[in-house]
Image 1 (cartoon, rainbow, N blue to C red):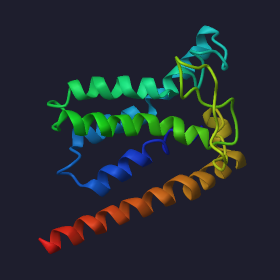
Image 2: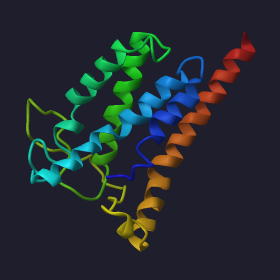
Image 3: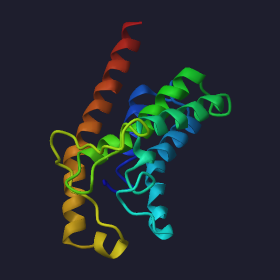
Image 4: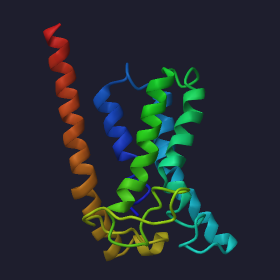
Length: 178
């Protein structure tokens, strides 16, 4: 899995690229939380639930259905999030589903249960380029942790920044034309 600091990069880049008039501060905060929410499944280890189980790591909480449910709950709170229900739904769906997509590009683990509950199969992306993050702070502060951060900077942060800058430039050009 990418680190907890990298999962929010995608919704942050999209929100900044879209602008504050499109994505409110509250919606951005909700999207940031939604982007890391699937990894709460690690508490399953404390209850003896194995990694490969449906309710284990990268199981149901990494599915498209889970992202859909999170987005529906968020859409119901759209007024509080200072947004429209459709914008809230799509932003939170994107933020939540992006977690599993990023995990699918990592070099470790058992894959992602994208299609749960219709299938227990776990999937990886066609290429795995993001080095999987170690569990635990001590292992993260090691040469392996540095390698993980380097791969995240290259494969997540850099492309996200490029897309964000493109969105900002497009927005500015559009406002200048008006």
